[in-house]
Length: 176
Image (cartoon, rainbow, N blue to C red; front, side, top):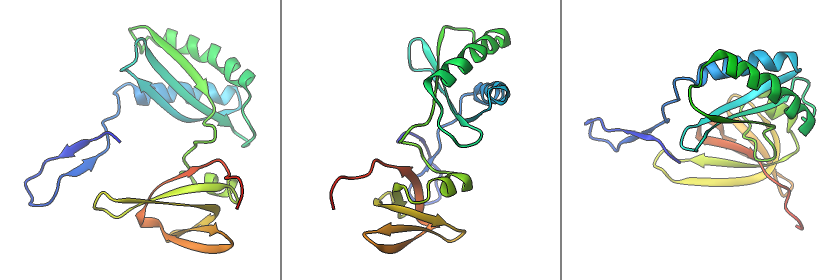
């Protein structure tokens, strides 16, 4: 996981900061979100991969009603979005536009995600604030202001929400 360090001289260890967003990212997100409305889609994420040659604009979408996004829907949205990008002149160098759905590796972030994927297998990453992480897997039961609840082999496990750094959907395991 990349990031920048805040090298303050306050006596403690350096704190990991989030990477700085690309300055065009907010404009790209607005442009994509505007076009997604007409296609009955919702933009989940926009990434700009400037380290690739040519750079890649990756737009992840899902249906507004929560149903699956087909390859045809991604292709149908890609054309008008590409035209909007060209006419906006936001990008002055060659790029590749990728439109896709988040897929099985989706990170759950919103209340809607935690409701929609109740009963699905998830991996919960817990941090201790010192850099060590633990991963707990189970079926998602829910989330409230204080905790995330998992079903782990028939037992409810309650995880302190303040310690949770990521919740991701995972593929179900075979066997017991």
